[in-house]
Image (cartoon, rainbow, N blue to C red; front, side, top):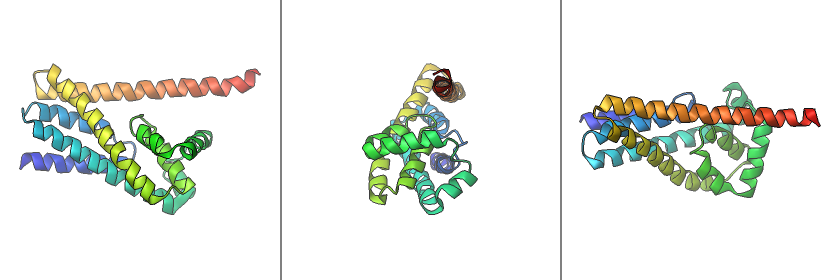
Length: 194
């Protein structure tokens, strides 16, 4: 019964975090997987992956629906839309190859929201989005669960594995964010020096 309650909470946190992107959903899945590892029941880890993927999928569908219905006006009000230039390049990549871009966007920290916005603003067919997003969410949940299992296997106490998994996810996210900001700053400086 406790496992079902924990999975329900994981579902709520990840689904909410998919719509409100400030919630560290990857860290939630990693932490749950680290705890599940210490139960010594592999089926619990599979349930964590399934709950994380299902919640991410439901949250993505809700966000996609909001973006399709509310358009750019709602995206600006919710502060989902921050960089017009980046959104234009994402739209261009989506126009060329929709499914690979959707798959990869879920794995790149901060990459999912611009791709969802671009897909909604381009009017990507619901069927395409629904089909392409399912494996993206499953892959995302599996990757973050694997990070949690790795953290759980290194440390003898469950709480240590959870802390290590969450710290690793936050470090990865911050590093990628820092790299992206540096790259954007360099690209912005190029036209000025020409």
